[in-house]
Image 1 (tube, rainbow, N blue to C red):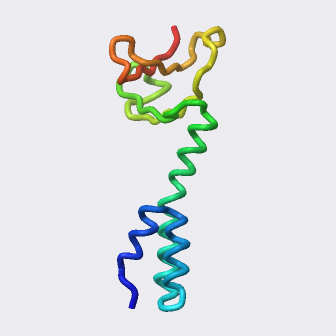
Image 2 (cartoon, rainbow, N blue to C red):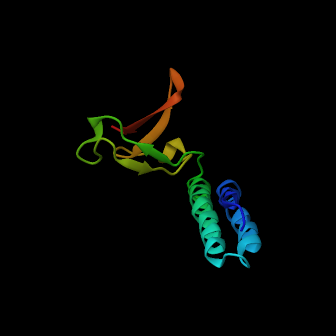
Image 3 (cartoon, rainbow, N blue to C red):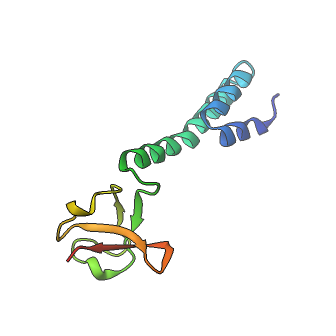
Amino acid sequence: MKSPFWYLLPAFLGIIGGVIAYAILKNNDPQKAKRALLIGLIVTIPFFVWTGFTISSGTSNPFYVVATSGMIPVLQVYDIIVIQGHEPFEEVQVGDIIVFDRPSDHNRVIVHRVQ
């Protein structure tokens, strides 16, 4: 009987670990082999989704949460917004929602509607 620690391999290595664990477990326990492959997929898919969003949006963090009620009724507190990064300043229009680094603290961002 193989060690249950083979489930750690796909958890740390994603789909590659799932394939390796599947190859090792498939003859002794096909059900565990399939589960190890599934764990690898489950761990890897969010990484690819995140990478796809960052590439398509042109920014390192495409997701932000609205923290205050200043944008009601269009956006509610705790709404999640997906942004597209690095639009030229000349193309920003009144009514657009923008996200920018806070001038006094670059560790925070501000989400505002252009007035």
